[in-house]
Length: 428
Image (cartoon, rainbow, N blue to C red):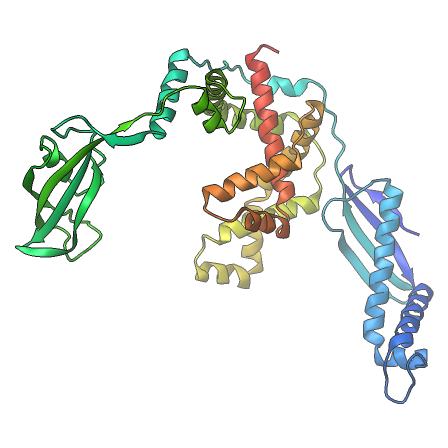
């Protein structure tokens, strides 16, 4: 029979003794199962005596028997605690074999009791909701139209900054043709700074059909070391002048951009307004969010599951160890006192992080904040695309490393802080 000692609402110790007779009974049970399938020379399958099995697999049988009995102690303890789930893995803190049996003590970690009323709103600082002007919307709309520009031949003779000069060129260094230093019908946007410094500026003012010798000097830090810092000459012929014509802003443009057959210019403007507003909110809200979190940690005193804190310390230690030299890591591995001292540096921050997780979770429930699986998938897809990775591979990585709950908690926190600040800005 397991005995429960509740240290606080988040930490409990299950105490029990595995009686010798119970251990022997469990060993017999396991040995009988093995005997049914064991293949031992001299005995027919299923006819191996239990005594023989126990003699041959004695240590393994004992280990499995103890494991099963300890699991039962833990299961009984959880049942007696009356909780649906525990946090992290139970930790065996005492395992004492004696004449009477085995005295076992196991620490179990559970979600702490926490009472949240309306006091958390005191942590939300004053903030003004950002406004978006019609001018800002139209400017962004014009930028979108420019991004969808079409190129056409310009009705002009002289190249200017901003034009696309279609050129033939051939380069020389010390009078000798450059390797890979020539091209034909090359479209160069003047002012883009995509060529060697001074090259584009010398094309400005050239007329269509004109050939000109351009002199430049390669930068000292140029990628190809054999020509870095050297002077060069290019024979350049301006073949044609092109210009970019922004896309026409109409309902068709809106439908194409938003991927919505029902979209209109007004729909697109509303989308742009929300985008700008969210961007401004991110800038305004960012420093306020840290302020809220710091306040919440100070405002609430809750019991913290020690095992979860230790896991958080493990994460922080591993992250910090990645910055250490092999010699420093070896010194920590060989010196338990130094390693403990190193771990202790992260204890307070780890406690605050774990504490904040429970506080945020509870406030999020009160504010009806939820994050769907679809939202999590969207975030992972976006992250994968930004990094040029296969989204399915990234999802698999998150699953295999049990990172989905962490990501979900981060999204819950982000949504909660945004809502608290938005409500404050509205005066709620």
